[in-house]
Image (cartoon, rainbow, N blue to C red; front, top):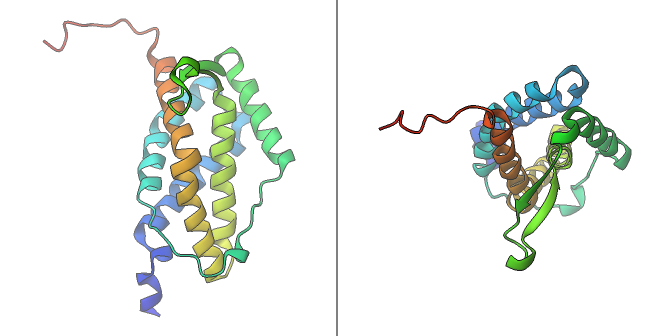
Length: 180
């Protein structure tokens, strides 16, 4: 029995990631109970932790890829996205440089609500698949989440954290001489 817990899918890093991902998803699901400012403060705190825990997910070899599943429906995604967009109002849309594009076309319009909804979808799918009582499901959950961290939700999270930092501190006067 103890040898099971030495496997990567049961590692401390995976279990800690589950806790943070669960907190993120719960907060997003109760979005209508929070103001935009509360969202920004929550994301300022949980975002870097979520990124750190995602970066520590182990590389897992999947034995049965057919055990992979997605759970968040398009309708559920749209509901989350529209709720977030409504909470953020005019602060939802911003411009950022996207380094994947040609430098001449690098400035892209981004929706904070869409980024956070995309992250929610990937994390919720991970949590629901990992809950299944099957080793193959857990392998697929960790493997997929790590891949999506690298290609999708990790970059979206970093972009969101940077924008949220701006929103939280944009009106604060700079005291440029305070560190000298």
